[in-house]
Amino acid sequence: MVGRVRRTRRKRRPARMGGRMADEQKPPINVELIWESDLRFGARTDGHQLVIDGDGAVGMAPMQLVACGLAGCMAIDVVHILARGRQAVAGLGVRLAADRAQGPPAYYTRMRLHFVLKGDVPDEAVERALQLSRDKYCSVWHSLRRDIDLETTFEVVGA
Image (cartoon, rainbow, N blue to C red):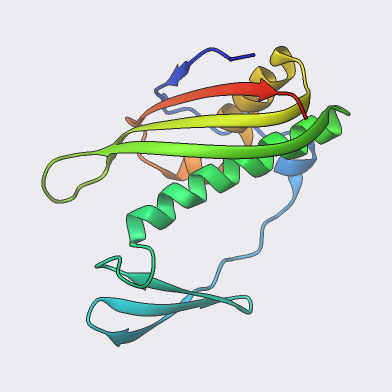
């Protein structure tokens, strides 16, 4: 089954609190960057590390990391929400395509995420999970510009 496209342009409004995911006080995030060479930096946080590369030769560029952060955040939310709803998710993949503004700063103007779920999951449950992620839980989405056009689509395939 294939789900509908949802477009969202956020309006400024206070964040709603509620539910277990929103009630926890989050610790501060600390990141250390060390210049390695050219436009390449080593990034470390909480024992994890990766390479950030402005040229994209040996690591992801910063805007690719932002896109990965959004896809990852929403995917985690969807899996968590569906699991709490006792839905039989056997797998999940996300494809993201994004458009950027011309010229500096080349911020995101449009982001399209397509979720492919495996398992016996009703469309209504997936739509609800995506809506909750967008509207309430996804910290990355709520940290981005308010005028980004976000589209989410999904399909559910057999396990």
